[in-house]
Image (cartoon, rainbow, N blue to C red; front, side, top):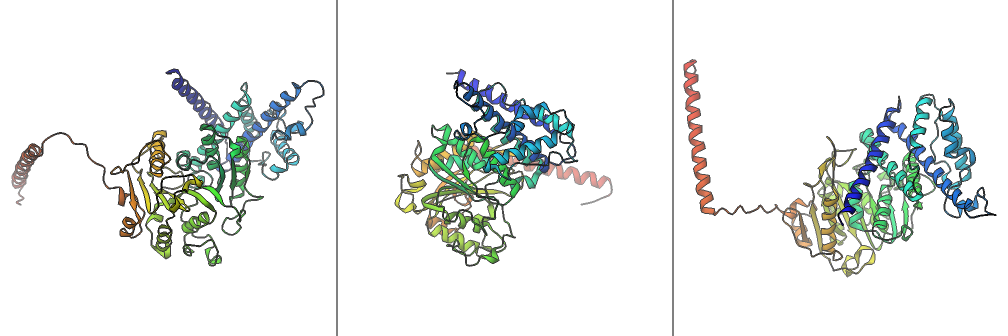
Length: 524
């Protein structure tokens, strides 16, 4: 079937062309706004376009139902999970006024009206389109530009296109914002690695620091790619940054994902919005090494089962918060700075030791550098699982028992440079890592075997001998070098001859230098 892959490649190329064209054009319209502010301007308009398109699609369906159907009956929309869009807020009305000098006020009014009619969106949609610093002529051009997305396509294709554009813009804004971009965006290849390894088909998914919701979007894609239904999972999250929390809600709404992100943005440590949640899968990219997390106010917190985390670094507070929220056979996969694998500062080593000795650590993956927009700090992936000792890890699936063993994967040499400063893991890299993990766990399609330089299944005794350090490089060893077929005796004779010739040439050059220096009156 040679035409299948070719067609897919063409589709991918066309998507990339549309996305990059939209970004290049929209970026020219930015004017004097920095990326952090402009992000909300653009993504808010994409969201407005999406809900209006979805409304229009449902409107056409109702008209096709024949006499008696009322396309202005809001119940006809809400019953199908479609947001009700007031007449003045519909995209054709907005776009018709794109050239008007008050286009910003019209958009602000549209956002306000939509929030009034849809309680779930209250205080979520961005405003401020009429601000003096936002050029209204350029804003109108941006409206016209976004108006081209999804036109002439089926509803699900339009939704997917808008979703991909939203996700693409999130990534580009993260790159443009640099360090600040990491507050709301985890690189897609890192998210895909976590999701492919955890394989969340059914159950409750939780992200305690969900950013713009990338973990949930990627989980949805995984489920659909494997023939499942998004309704098979329940999504829970929390985010402390109010603007990022709003981005996440819009991102999930575009994807049609129902999620409980709480009624407000909140600090996970000090206001846990899901105190009774026990999740089957936890995916997270906590902020690295934060020192001002208020740990001094939480010294007696019940979440610290494996040791009190230091007040100067929240890494192991995040780890234990996630363990606390795992279901009896739940599994967690998350990103942490490499220092978490070996640090002994302020009791971190003792907490790590306690997690290991409790047989909670399932797998460790060392990632290559330059994956993140926000930091050059090397990072790793942790995978923790509850109740591995009865062979039913991974959300209760019956698996080969891996108690008393940890899988180490060294992926530092994987990936490719997507641009001058950022690296990405390829689909092949991600699949190799995930296949290795699943084969080791017993639910993959192949047999697991240690590969020198890449992966090693180490016993708890091995880890104890290494002082409970979890750095994969300590366990996987060096990659085996290919045998060139040259007999050892012949190779040594050849190399010895080459060395002798090089030493002789070195002596000749030394004599030549001495001679030349002597002619200049300098003796060595």
